[in-house]
Length: 118
Length: 111
Image (cartoon, rainbow over all chains, first blue to last red; front, side, top):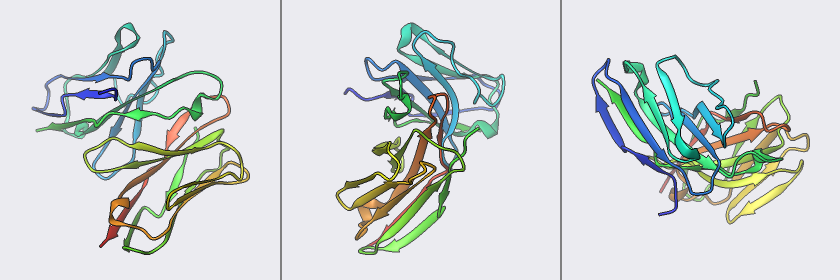
């Protein structure tokens, strides 16, 4: 399909382990976003990539969280030394990105990775 | 930092009833978007409003952007169980530097 793809769809791991979450954005979308959604809550912004610009990391909750975007396409969100409070659904979205009035561009979301820390 | 508030937080109604949910801020937004999220899925865009006072209709859903571009409302006529979900508003500022989501309204339409 042509939508945003996230993998794995579910991840269960032990506290203290590292995890990597993957996002394949829609082809041609230059902007990519990561969000976290706790059970029954709204979306918490984590990080934003736009083209070759330095990413906006202002939403990352701690230095255990990092993200990369290789070749302007696929992105990986890494959580090191996971804690139980990291349990949540991690959503990725892509959009046509930065241009005048970019805030008008719709974000296309994947179905998320449900992360459970035991 | 711009913030969006949504009300009510939860809403449970019977099929066939009408409802309105609200998205408010003290800040001006260049545009506001409404998304609906169903369990186990990512949010899906319903509409974008960009002009103060703008009204857009999507079947039984009516969206309005406030004149001052600080608030928006979503009205659903004759709600159906398929309307059940989390309704999120999201907005960006005039400079495209910030984009924030509200906390959402969780709607349950009972048959």
